[in-house]
Length: 187
Image 1 (cartoon, rainbow, N blue to C red):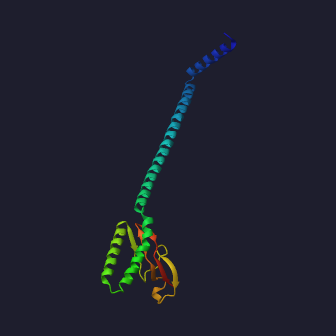
Image 2: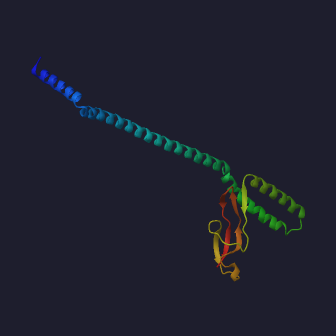
Image 3: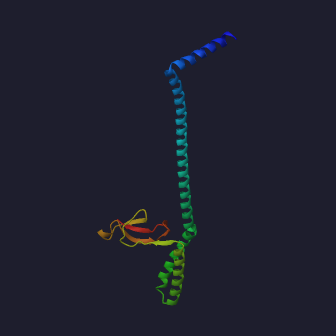
């Protein structure tokens, strides 16, 4: 054998005999390996906890995404015909003007015929979700609902800051306002 291997062999024997004779050294070396094993175990537990947390967050985010897209899809179905209905609103205004003028004439049969067509048209649009926004003279002005086209001096103190006249009717489709009522407000 070479000198190096003999030296290594004797050092190994000395270490083993010291450990056998001194139990404190034996506990220390075994304790350090146990601590290393525990720390590895703790590290793995921490990694597992982090991964579980990441998974739960991702799962919750996905659930929120599904709910949001489902709600958006439902809103889209509710308001799918919004463009068509908005383009029909001037026809409703024309019907109102025609009925107003026909009520002045003596031909009551024509008035009844146009009124029947108007009612049928309104009921069809109502079935599709169209609602008229009820606005009357003396109502409180709400900037989120009403569209003030002008302000005039109020005829009396009670009408100050309130609606004096409705120029154009407003409509909602579901919960969304598709045309704000145009009003004159008292100043």
